[in-house]
Length: 133
Image 1 (cartoon, rainbow, N blue to C red):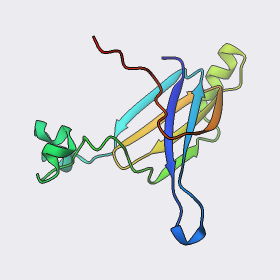
Image 2: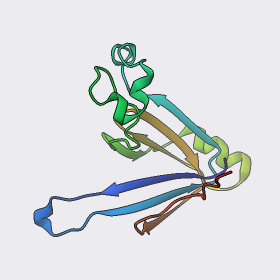
Image 3: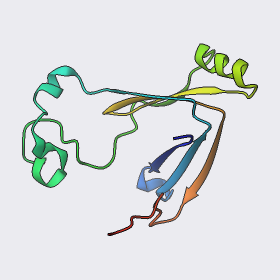
Image 4: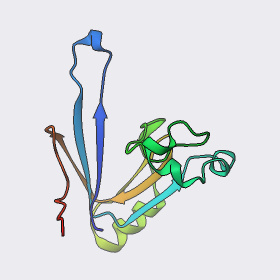
């Protein structure tokens, strides 16, 4: 609720010799987080079938398969320069705030935050523990 975590899987052309890696971006003190669908209405109209929620039941259907458990980071992330929203929060709280826009194939996410911590993740990272009843 206060911080927002984004996990990115980074890859390069295998010929470069650069190994894939997971990076964690922890946006701290998120005072605003807005998310809009990047999927156009025509695609939404054909993607309402509940079977599209999981990959296994939706893979062979027409429509957008929501249940892939990842999103393509395209067109990508960018800092919103001269953000009026970030300036308002900076003035109100007394910390420097920034705005980032993260565009994926399915969502357009905007975060207003005061700090970001970037770290490399190891295989098997889980942000929380699942407790079975």
